[in-house]
Length: 436
Image: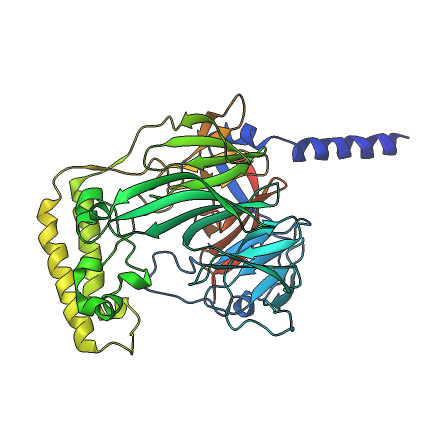
């Protein structure tokens, strides 16, 4: 009898520990991420991540890898620049590699990253170059194809077999950003928010001097080779992208949350796209000093001057690439004197939804490994309740919802292990504890 009571007591204590609300941990102010050493412990990471490249052109190595958690806790990884996905069991054990097959059982020659799951039984991918979204079952068999006529930054599934998409298009004199709800069954879409920006504010060097933000020079369209290929090296069509300028979306309690980094606004819609209420971030805006802006711009100049910073495009002559690089760096240098005032940074860089339905708004980092986040809970229309940050001894944290996913109180991550031999990328499951 005493033995039975002891077993029941231990079980209740375990259930109590597992049912602890994550927000209670966040309120401690600092969260330590402790790797589960039993999870995925026998995998051969050098083989699994054999397509992993130590790229010198990206700040975060392997930044395009991503993970999706299936309903049973299994994990599927997308390998950037590789024509396959990897599947892992709920315990993290490698199961298989697979791709997408068409109706005739033939594999696709090229696949895109998995964005999420719709209806608990179908994967959907990001868009390819012509706006196709591929939807396939958990065995890789193509189920259907959705067609969108724009570019996308983010896609999420909604509870009613619909998808929400952050899209953008380049028009004649402006760029239009918008959020749309897509019906999975009919492919019909409804735009629920949109914003137009004058092209003068985002194109060419004027973007750097006005925003003070680092441009995305790692983008294929932002290389001297691409610039030389388009318009014979003319800079008038050369476009920079500002990080975190576009909306970030999340689904909480049958609501679609649309958050705007530039203004800090939080718009709350129902699943049919009707605006219900508005909220706003409540922390002080950070600024990029004149010195920091100039240092960022100088780093960009140095990278454009480096012949090793970009892949060689054999379809463009080296003479044109060199000429385009010189024109670009000359204009960047001449713009340096136009940087005279501090510039506001976006109110947040990204949002990660935890397994309790809380949204973690990460402030825009000015230093490496900075990851302060503000916890927003959907109560009484939405409110911020505390501020916290992650601490991790074993891994360099890359804060991104495609690389950090919550499930049943754990945080699953595609992260790089410190001091690792061979390829450092790992699929890891973290337990969240209050830091000492």
